[in-house]
Image (cartoon, rainbow, N blue to C red):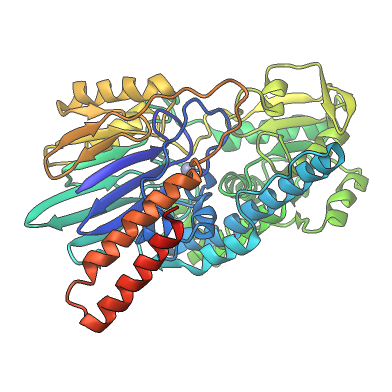
Length: 535
Ligand SMILES: [Zn+2]
């Protein structure tokens, strides 16, 4: 009964944990690293073809984005998750594969011209389609016997549509333990989806710590009021409100607010303003939200649904799917709202809209999410007077605004509050998914508050869950500045051979008792293979 921490260890992205129990190997999340990357992730100590299944907490790419790579390397097990997460993965993994292929093509065009070696994408569309085939969705709150001795249950954690914490019951050789993986813990009072649900029992908890040392602020901000003010002021100047937004989650929250603003006629002087959603992914994601209302929407959103109202649709909503639709937006001279991705302005159609609107003093660029260091979004928030887009220098004359307090993550109090739901004494809390020192800080906070041991592992760290003993704290290998995130490190070819050898040994042991004829055949094959390579 062993847990190994692979990704999001002393880091915020690339969630991936390996659980070995009852002769089964289970991955909890298999995410891609995004943005700043401090430490090298250790290799998975097993070949992907030997992993029995993946349990997925939610669809965000930093939790799901490497599943197609796992499939490319031979994984054929099930991906167990909620229905809504399964639907979101269907669109997000294809989108991610498209980005991988697109980036490889762009790099290779450059490489060919320079006579350099070609770049292989992490995975391609077919790998994503293979992964989607393996999705095995289940309902919230249903205890499922996954294998002999292992049961799981997914409970709403209020972070994204379909997001869950995963409870795992293990009974190995008469030793019973229960471990809970928090996934990303949601913020309370997020629109559309429910608040995080507490769990009562566990021996071990693996918890995220994105905001493990910060508070969002005392009161729930008045998003609708603030949003209305920005719309009123911008439209009075005759400008557009351009919103760089994450396609999945945040865009749907914005649509939810705008529907309310329109219904209550809060923009009095210009109530029929148009809203363009210019992102094919956001449009597909909105459809997934509309399909998965039952069991996922909170009381307020569900009330609208029951009244026959789609809470994400309103008069004046325009969806741009093709790039021609996208270009046409700029020919419409009336003031309007444009919602487009990516959320940090690093790629996608938003960059075209910034080029057309940034230089206009009557317009507003409205930020609605976290902007990482080094991104164009961060530069704009920090007041850059001039930015470069498509090789052109653009003067920043538009108003730059931020809708404050909007977050999909619980803050420190939210995390502690969720932990306080456990009524049994926790034997150990493992802190992951936070910035370097924040994970240690939050581990201390947990020990102070609940009096139980808490530990923030580095990648490769592992725990014997039967004995509650830390086997390894993990390896602290700092990345060199400028290194690109490598996601889960691809195994060296030699290590893959070693793993394959161990796998062969397992297969041999499994076949004890086979007929002598079959065993002799097996032996000859192994002998031949060994002779061939013994040189
Ligand atoms: Zn997330």
